[in-house]
Length: 388
Image 1: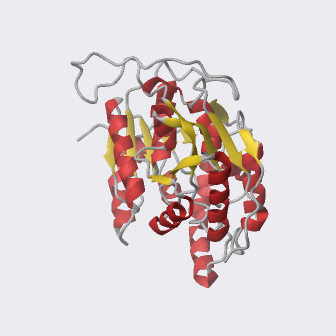
Image 2: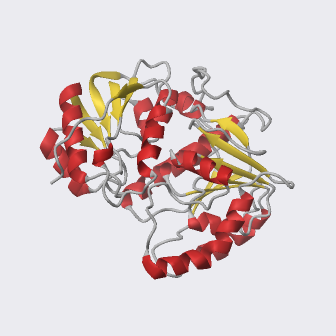
């Protein structure tokens, strides 16, 4: 039986796994390193590979030992494919990676919980990528570790920090609530688990809580902040070759019910025309039907990345300008692409694009994502025709 790892990480998306690798890279010279100051310009360093005869999966010199990463994959094929490729990169860095199915059947969560309970209780440090995940919150009820690390799950980290500071229950920003009587009964039954998770995320009484993020946040209480400047990504990949064109970055705002599909298509069409865009990097959750409609309406080449965009852009080739709607990448790409000459631009979302089912929080949250992005060019919202 494999001995329990002193550090246990749980990830559910490719970006979360990337950020665990970034966190581990920061700790390779010892956990006392506080990381760069928020907003500091990261230093450019090249990756120094190990000897060519090193065994596959051997840990890099100085890399932290005892890190086990547990992948709790979603069911969609694109996410699973990216996660498998990221898992390969993690193994190349010398980390233990295991794949634990916790979805796809009524008994899958219970089986996964039974398989993980020993390691969860034995871990001295727990790293998680999605504090809003109900499954992760359930695992936290078993945690005995005194150290908890939260790595970025994109812009959701901003809402996580705000909600924990206010002592609120953890709810994703794009959820409008509802669900009827059955949904309210589920929430009531789950309330003790959610309350325990919130206590775990509060530093004090011997608990150390750290947030490792690229987002512009201010932590509260005794929570520690370490900045993710994508040092591992910059050492491992690139710098990229730049093309003459502009690349657009897709978003899942339509899929999450926040933005009207017709408004979104019109906005992409306008940005394509204004900026001479030639490629569209699809979000892993964008539907094939939506992407076909975008391609037919704009002539854009649709690219379905096999890794998180930070790695794709750093590996190149990439456009000299990257245009995105409010999303995680307007905060992460300026770090990942520092010193390359690439301009990252963010296009604001017009409130008229929002659907009737969008949460009351959606408008201010998206504006905050845009307004707080550093080192980007800001574009005004594009006027679109009425949704049809």
